[in-house]
Image 1 (cartoon, rainbow over the protein chains, first blue to last red):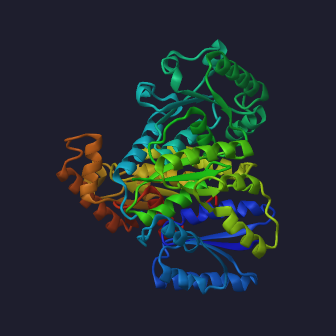
Image 2: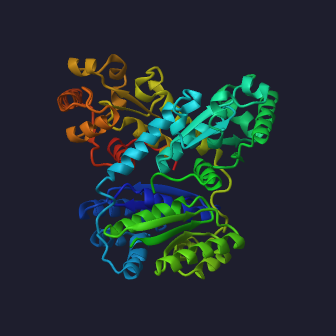
Length: 270
Length: 270
């Protein structure tokens, strides 16, 4: 039977989920039914949440796990009465942090004033990634922080978007086409920005699988084609001295953070 | 003086950062210098991290805050010797969770096998968002989970991308143009998918500011134009019965999670 888990927050619930996913991943042999209850920011909503938890507890016959990041103590107390096993994140950490910092906590929910500069940096970076996706343009490369290159479907687009959304980094991407690969050289528009280039590498089997999802049984997805492209691009990376990373076993988050680590790229937002 | 904070992980560091940001937001009167040390997954790297922390401690004359999500106990122990005030997330929670679940933790770092189905769902959703951005196409609306509408620069694009990246939701967006707004009606391509529509609303002042960033002193950014568009679109939302949300004071995360809450939209990944 799957164990039920509730992520509860007075905000978006993303912190509770992120932490919860990391903790549950430590118990990979078990399966979990996950419920997120965001915006539990009043006694009424807390009582609603308790009713939901208790209903699941009754059905499961086992206490659900509760992982909460609720700021308001009174709301937390209501949730603590539910028939669950509660992991209260703020209760656990905020007291010790208060002691160490010597300052009272605000007790305000989430970041209720949007940081306008960070918002703008982030949105601009997202639009930059979109405008400079898939080699669509090269004239903005002067203002790029990084330019990802790789064969088609090696993860360039989602990585650029993640770099933009999470870190405000202006990331362009450019697919190396057969012409570039056959000629074993970088196109001129990339050569001019060589210091900004970073290559994505992928295992042949994974590339074949991904391309087959897109265009089954095509030349594009054939083992010969995939192998040839991968060999050629690796040759270019090495010959041109472009740093690169094999992303076959990585999540988008890992690709992005590994790139930052390997290049020393600076985040524009924290 | 800013207080230094280290986020340390044997993985990407995103969990430690996400939790850390939530905790530090409770002390909004203070300023923090933030350092993320990802991939601290060996004794050697842990010793490197300790040297960095100790150097900052010596410079600051105050112990840095350390928030870590390191799985390996031996690596954690090394970090615990640093001259810092450590908030050890796994130490704090994994023991109690083990007791409650009655299963030993894996002690494996991160999710080292990429969940192929979730990866594909997510990447497909990102490509869907890009292909269906800004009204570029309408022929894929049958397979959209949601279609965001709104005036230009009301946050549609980043919200669609966030919905895709975080939740695997297939989100299209369509900007209502002056023609649509003057005619006080939804275009035909949207009417056919009315049940999938969700409107974004924005305060006039915020829209003026955002548009001025893009095209300063243009008609597009003028108070009259912005006001007229916002009034017209609100009229359409109400007349057509399209649910909508004022996103002026919201982060992208909040817009996305509020939309999920208000529409009951199902996530495709957890």
